[in-house]
Image (cartoon, rainbow, N blue to C red; front, side, top):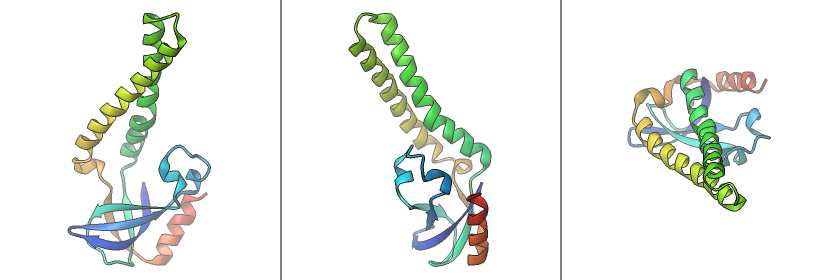
Length: 145
C-alpha cells in the first residue's frame, strides 16, 4: 500500500509526515485515528518540510497488522467468555468479567508484540520517494474510490 503524505517537520533522522484520513475511515469509528482528519507519523528518510512524499507499507503487513489489532482482541474476549461460562456457569457478571479479562490479557500481549514488531524494518512504513503535489492529489483521488 502506497500512500501520499506531506512532510511537516524534521526530527533527527526522521521526517514527520502528515496523512489525510482515507474516506473509508470516515464512518468506521473503529479507532481513535478515525476521529481525526489527519495523522502524523515519523518515518525514516530525507525530505524537506512542505514536500510531498510517497510512503509504502507492504500489503501483506497491513493485513497482518489488521488481524493482530482486531481479530486477536475479539478472540481473547470470546475465549474469556467461554472459559468463564465453563468455570462459573451460574454467574453472568463473572462470565462477563472473564471476557473482559481475556480482552485485557490479549491487549497486553499485543502491546508487547507491537514493541517487538516496531523494531523490525519490514513492519515499518518506508519512504518511496519525493513526489509532486499533483501526484499526491492523484494518488488520493484513487484511494477515495
